[in-house]
Picture 1 (cartoon, rainbow, N blue to C red):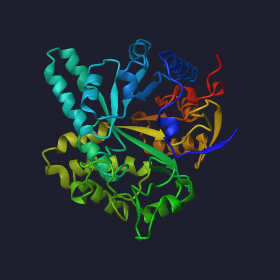
Picture 2: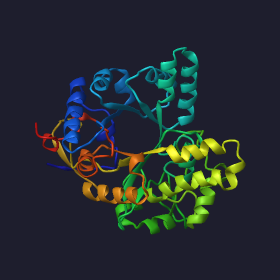
Picture 3: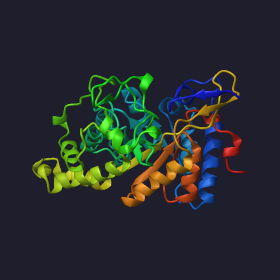
Picture 4: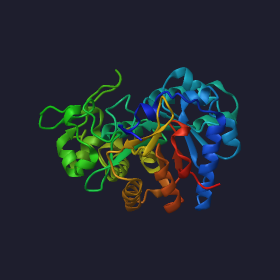
Length: 375
C-alpha cells in the first residue's frame, strides 16, 4: 500500500472520481450514521452535507432523506440559477456559500414571488452558512470575514480548524498556512517550499508570524480595515498584532460576544443596524469542520486503498481540544461538527451526543467498512 501526501480537501476528497456514487450509497451512509448516533443517545439525526450539484442532479436522494428525518445541507455555491433551484427544494435546509449577500438577495426574491404563507416561512428559515466567514467578500477565516457574515445576519458561521503544537483549536482551512492567503509579518518570503504546518507552530507564534489578508478569491473581496470596525476594536482588546492575524475557536466565540456588546453598549449602539446585530450575536450558530482526512482513501484511478499522510493530530485530539473550548465558552447548544473524516463525527456522537454531526462525504466510497457501525 503506497502513501499519498495530501492537503485537506485534496482532489481525491473533493474532485471527480472514477467510481460513480448512487442514491443508495448516500442512503446507506446516512442509515449507518443514524444507527451509530442513536446507539449513543443522539437526539437529532445526523445531517448530510452534500455537493450542491449532486443534490440538483438527484444523485443525492433529498426527498428520501427528508422522509427519514435526516437533514440536508448543500455546499458550496453562489451560482444564481443553482441557488434558486435549491431554494425551491423543501428537502434542503440550508446552503454553505462564499457569497451570503447573493444568497440573501435570492431568498428575498423567492419570498416575494410566492403568496403561500407556509412557503414564505420555509424560505425565511433557509439557513445560510457563511463559508469561512464569507470568503467571497473578505479574506477567509479572519475576524473581518466573520464580522461581515454577522453584519449580513447569516444563520451560521462556517469555519474549519486545525490543532497547533500547544493544543489550541486554530481556525484555518488547510493543514498549513497557505502562501496565497497569508504573508509573514516580518516581510520575509513565504512560499509553499517553506510552508508552516499548524501542528508545528504554537498558537501565539502563529499570531505573531502571519497576516492572512491576501485577496485571491474574486473581485468583491476587500480587506480595508475601515470596513471592519468591530474587528479593529476586538484586535485592540486582545492585543492582536493585526485584524488579519490567525485566530482560534476560543477567540471567535469571544468575538461574537464582543460584537453584540459593541452594538448594544459600545461605539456601534447608534448604528441603525444595532438592534438586529445584537440579536445576531445572540443567535448565530457555528458550523465547525475538523480539518482531518481519512487514513486510507481509494485511488482515483484503480479504487485500491492508499495510505494517506496526515500532517496533523489524530481524531481524539481534535475532539478533545475543540470540545474543551466549546464547553469553556458555553457554546455547546450553538455548534455542529462537520467532517470529511467520520472518525471525529463518531467520537462526537459517542462522547457528546447532544452535539449535531454533519457528514461531509467528498465521496461515499472513501470510508472502509470497518469504520461503520456493525450491522
